Image (cartoon, rainbow, N blue to C red; front, top):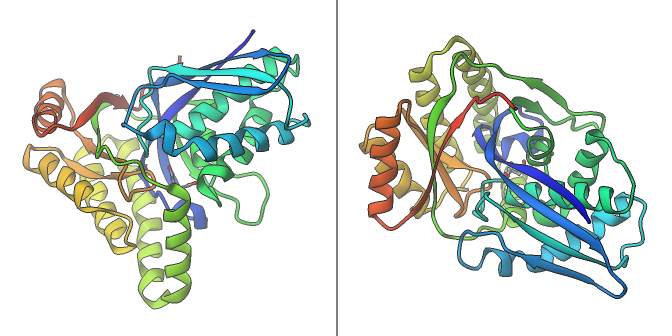
Length: 313
Ligand code: MEV
């Protein structure tokens, strides 16, 4: 049997803009998706035991099948190769947390082990990028890069097609965050396509927001590196405003952002593809984290208490 894992991720700055070559800042989560793969005689079977949003696995089923076929092709294997695939782990199947990329990396690693391919991490990342196309259409590569390598990073897609630019970010001390799921499964592909279409139709409105997103990422990196957490929060709030501007937020996401800010979070924004999915709030200190997280739980939402900036083990 082959085994593999992939990290989840939370984007602090730059989702959507990153698809178009604007830099983004992403942190892998401690929570991971695990996979086990066994050669079998007949067909491909998938057993998905991830916990998470109701309906996540069912809604993503077709994209998941396509992603595995893309993955096998990218590995130089027959897309019909028979095997049983199990997926589980402690990363919840919430939209926005990079669950698809985490599962692609986990499965690619497990297949590589079971079929003796010995793929290095760089190849696993490329294979997972191909698999991500099934979920995101035109992905930036930020999710699969975080899922493969883990840690905290600055990511800039190479829109000319060469290697992406990835730089590790180190912050003075890991900071508590709260991730909260709207409970709504989002279609990242439709969200990414929608932004591209509206940007093309309305450059006068979209270009200044893209320019500001680029500045926010750079200012965010500086604030993280110098430990100016208050500034990081302010920039997250501004980032949420421009995500609303490009029409990827939703009333549930805006509600969660409002609750987080009211409870004292230094900043809050949607994270990931939006249109449902998750919100992230910056809540330094266990006490503030607990206050924000429990306020959301009281409203019936599922939360994840974690940190950004934890160095990879
Ligand atoms: C999804 O986690 C992030 C998006 O920017 C898509 C991508 O970068 O591939 C919406």
